[in-house]
Length: 506
Image (cartoon, rainbow, N blue to C red; front, side, top):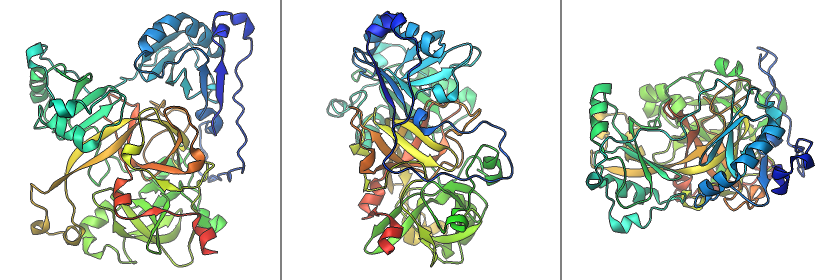
């Protein structure tokens, strides 16, 4: 699944000992994943996707790593010249900028896609051309009040639980930051940065507010940023309609697997009645019932006009390619996910198309940690590698399904009836979409599988499901992070991963 290359430090110094590029030959899986087929029309104009073995490869060194945040800056400056020499020889890199957890690598001609590792020396490698703008490593802006006496102070008991580069409890994080910032609508922790999100306002009002906000924390070791509006679209709707035809032009896999193979799998394209596309989730089961996960927001318009018909087989229809496969039957708590009941005779195999594992366990958000390496499979991205970066906590009105589906104003929950939800935040080395599938519209619904823990333990064969990709992107000032809803609501509702659905039926 991953190709790890370990290079002795002495080879960084004695470059004559290293004349050849490192090998990125993949380790052959025990069972070859089934090859995706792609539509004949329209023909994609871009080169084919990057081989999965390269997208999940790493280049590491024997005597140092930049993956330890406690020592990384000192290590980087000690080894910067040797590292740049090595990267120049192997990949043609002219300049390297370190901003944990990223290495920004700039060259006159970045190496071919099939020669770019995902990580180098424990950092996510972001490849830039000579004129490419360097993406902002973290979203948000700093406050204008630099008076130390006005810095934000967190309750001492809660402050002890907030440690950089460690995953905090989402409710604790939200409670801690809401004290100094009572009008915050959400709080995001990414590595060693806390971003306070406020309701969006006009530019003039925001500039005035930003100038009055404290520049730093007084008693926790985090940088402090602010955003005008939420980082992610947390409501059950999308900012841009991910029309299937636009995804086809971006090398999307639009195959009708049910028509061609008689079944479909996680990662396949699903289509709503509104012709919106999203990625099929996994099969889960509870009490003898089996359901498949799908993103609820793609049926948003139908929900507004026919919410009383939710759960009716004639409504909220789901297609895989052009074939009807089922309908949305129920929702899960306040998540954007719905449970799809398959039509009779439709088969679903609970194994991934491009990931060599079977979903086995749902993990809670607190069970994953910054630095964990994840992989996901979507018709809109192919196989994509991510790194866990932190957590996002936000306030939302509780959705009581028995009244919510009636669609009446008097049935809405009272303003005080709120709960704290959380999302995982994940880093990617794909800030732009140029020639191969990246994080983009349509990946919502795809599940995230843990590949490596933060201490480099390989766990892919455990089939640990860590989250479900969220539909919305970050604001445009940062393109290196994306969101995923955690699995806690599914676990709390009693749902579990199912062994291969088709095998179990047989």
